Length: 336
Ligand code: KG4
Ligand code: ZN
Image (tube, rainbow, N blue to C red):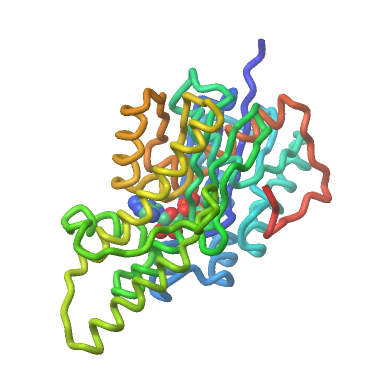
């Protein structure tokens, strides 16, 4: 059969990314231009600035991805693009440029759900991975345990009641002045801290075994820091980071195991920015070894936002016949 080449574009938050992916699994080229250096000056992503930087960079990023793949637009089979969820102005840049290329090159257009992209990242390095499996999705905007029934078919088994997991990492990092994005900084600090130093509450909801809640934990960390300051008591940043991270990781691991058992599943993947957290990767790896679960964790660079994962998801949408028209729009709160 003929190989399918898709140019994928991702601009939902603060990375401008383009990739060429063959048959949903082989990354021919992948370019990621991060805006973190700009947004960190403000302590978080500034939506207006994100949109403007995407506009400035998107054409160059696409050009580089095409050049690295040694291809012209006419060699492509389709254009895939993230159309939600995300920042509306940021998404619009990717969607507009994808439509322009698809229209000019007379290629099909495929809108991709950002979280489906994250889940599909696991297909890239693991050619044997096929549904059904469970995916633990932990990003800046989402915390879900998902049953992947088939390509493009999902059942949500667990969700967060309030903050997303990555959001909690970023907020806790801000409380101890670690800067943005906080996740990787907490991760690094936690490695040298004592996870048993402070007893923080669990990131779960009482009486609801399949729901996460991170706001109570976040508030407990903020209160702890404020109380210490008020009483002129010192604490070790690394111990706080390690104790907070343990609270998060324990609950994610526990609920993921419960989902695997309840659904009699033996295959697990991880997805999203927080899946690059070393403490979480270790804990999930141990849990899988103890319970005879086959685990697929994408490399950290495929866990955080990139366009290769969008190309993987777009491929399965494409072969299932999904096509979008010129009315494709950015949907900032696109549901799962
Ligand atoms: O998936 P992602 O790149 O973007 C979204 O779709 O949200 O996730 C970004 C989130 C941020 O909250 C960031 O702090 C977190 O992932 N993150 C981490 C780590 N690397 C990124 N959290 C914990 N440990 C990490 N190593
Ligand atoms: Zn993401």
